[in-house]
Every structure is written in C-alpha cells, then in structure tokens.
Amino acid sequence: MIPKDHPRYRSLVARERIARCAREGIVAPEGLAAHGRGEAFDYLLSEKTTESAALAERTAAAMLLAARHAVISVNGNTAALAAAEIAALQRASGADVEVNLFHRTEERIERINRLLTEHGVRVLTGTPERIVPLSHDRALCLREGIGDADVVLVPLEDGDRCAALREMGKAVITVDLNPLSRTARTATLAIVDEVTRAIPAIAAACASLEAGEAEHLIASLDNTYLLRAAIDEMRERLAHALE
Ligand code: ATP
Ligand code: MG
Image 1 (cartoon, rainbow, N blue to C red):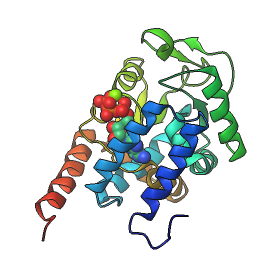
Image 2 (image 1 turned 120 degrees about the horizontal axis):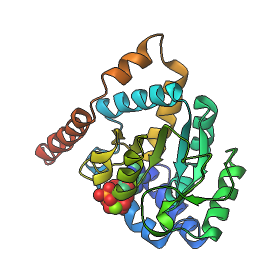
Image 3 (image 1 turned 180 degrees about the vertical axis):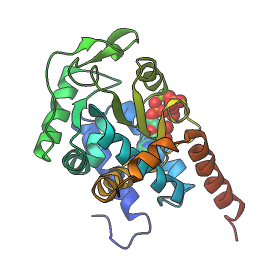
Image 4 (image 1 turned 60 degrees about the vertical axis):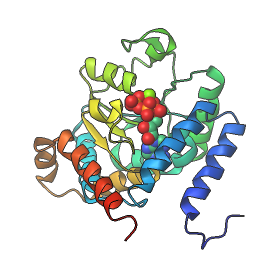
C-alpha cells in the first residue's frame, strides 16, 4: 500500500500500475524506460499542468471537435495509465479509439483492447493494413481508423511515426512530457503534460469550449511557441530550485 500522504503519491501509484501492466503483458519492457524519461521531465514541471499546457489542451479539444474523423491512438503505456480517462474523452469528443503499438504483437493488442473495453472504451477492431509510410509492422493501422482520420491524438508517440502520420497529411496531436523530443517538435500540436492530467483536461475542455473559441484556438495554434513556453517553465524551475 502506498501511503496517501506520500509527497510522490500519484507518481508511485502510476509506477505500481505500469509495473503491474508490464507483468501482465500490456506494457512492453521498453515502455518502462519511456515512462522513466517522462517522469524526469515531469519533475521539472513540479508535476503540474502549466498554463501553456492548459492552452494546448483546450486547442486539442477544439481540433478533435472540429475534425471530420478524429482517432485516438492508444499504446500500452497510455492504456495502463489512463484507460478510464480515454473512455471519458471518447464520450466527450466522439473520437474513435484504435490500439496501435510500436512493439506490436497480436497478443498485446488483444490484452489492451480488453483492458480498454473493461473501462468503457469502444475500441475499433478489424484487419490492419500497411498504410503508414514506415517499414515493417510500424506501418500497420486500420484503413477505417487511423488510415481515414484527419486528426489523430497519439499520446506518448515515437518521433518517427509522428512524422510519418504528418507526411500522410494528418494533423497530429501528441502528449509528451519531453519538449525536446522529435515527437513534440514534429507534431502539429504537442501537449507537454503528464498523460493522466492531459486526457481529462482535454475532455473537460470539450465540454466547456465557448462559441467561436474553437475557431480562434485553431487559427492561433503555434506549436513552437508552446514548446518554448514549456522549456521556459522548466528553466525557471531549475534556476530557482535551491531557493
Ligand atoms: P522521440 O522519438 O520523439 O525523439 P523519445 O525517443 O524520447 O522521443 P519515446 O521513448 O519514443 O520518445 O516515447 C516516449 C515519450 O513519452 C518520451 O518522450 C517521454 O518523455 C514521454 N512520456 C512517457 N511517459 C509519459 C507520461 N506518463 N505522460 C506524458 N509523457 C510521457
Ligand atoms: Mg523515440
């Protein structure tokens, strides 16, 4: 039992969950390393949603709602940490949900589908095809899912695949605590926030966007500005760390 008053309570709960999901074959071993990289960057944000991340989250909501076909692409880490949050975002945004893995095995896909379904997500299933311009299994996705989407939300994505989705002409929204990653720099919109804070914030924004606000947010989207703001927050925190 993790004591509730532990200063790192949320982080320890997340670690426990991701370790359990790794033992159950939902999270790939490599996913544990990726989680650690995320934790390090979250430390530099004091594990809080910054103002610029909140703006990015509202903009993401606007993009999902304005899309012709929005798809949320879920991997093992995202499913382990935020299955219930994905279900709520699906209800708020009307987006499809597809499981897409970097370290792809049919067994993991099935386990993740089951976990998501148990939490109330309606998961797209079908026969994946090699559609994304990448080699090997990383090209696989559903023609009627990510293949057809104009807007894709891919939390914790790899830089390569993010770039390939952009090459296909899709708008890519990512959630990535590392503002220096290729993913964050290649995405149409990068949300520099922890995935369990980001997904509920996007869902809340879907329900509270005001008339005209969505158009304004989309028209003024500037990913470089958002990444710079995230880096500034981290730099500020480092500069005053020992005060
Ligand atoms: P890239 O391939 O884009 O240059 P990378 O190799 O660091 O970057 P990956 O390891 O492919 O990225 O993907 C994991 C990314 O997700 C990391 O950048 C990490 O910071 C981020 N990340 C991990 N856990 C979380 C989390 N819980 N919330 C938000 N971001 C996270
Ligand atoms: Mg990578």
